[in-house]
Length: 315
Image (tube, rainbow, N blue to C red):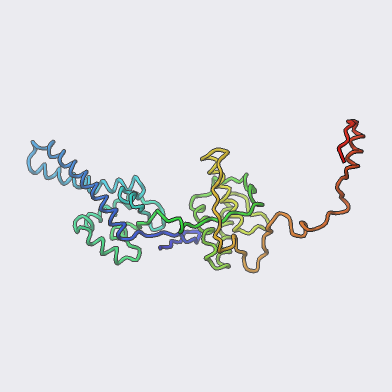
């Protein structure tokens, strides 16, 4: 597993693809590319039958570069790192920082791939993948890319803990349009991995993320609410809005239960704990105040008689 650290100091879990899955994806891509190359070459030779040998050789070289080199580059650029073989094997090419690749990344990978895959029958690429700790070939090293696995089993999936019920709907009027996707990813990664962090480090990270999120939304965390609860509540509000846009008002947000081995939200060392309910325990168990007695049935009956309705509720 490879951990990349974002600008918000959150480690992103990227699972580099292993050599067998990468080799299978390359074989599938080569099979499609060779089939397309043969079909195009036959068509070009038939159309250029009246030309001389030099023209046919030039057309053959152009066809080779266009189909076997330019084709994979165009496919990876347009699909953001998903070729046909990688799509079938659940792989994807990403940048070193976890972002989607662009044309220059695909161009470098394709150009070097001609040498280390086509001209050497994949020997150089296999040796480079064995030597690299993250399984990268030479094209990935020079392009600054990494092939990762997109499909993760359900047992390895991390869950975002839900905020407490008394925070539900607290941020329904919040403006989330100015929050970038990178910050949402950092918040989600922190919430899924906060139990693996040192308490002091995790608390400081949550405060930094909450401050950044508050500066984007214009609404800080309510007094007495820990930053982790604030992050979870705002992230839950975003999920609610996305569900409404996708499924309408009747859409329900899928629940993500927290891990049973860990408490939902760890408390910071030497910091005041947030209330677990809107009312304190003393308020819940305190007897009713004698200054505000509840109305008795006789008083309700007297009030009904004074109102002139003539209706007296049963005792």
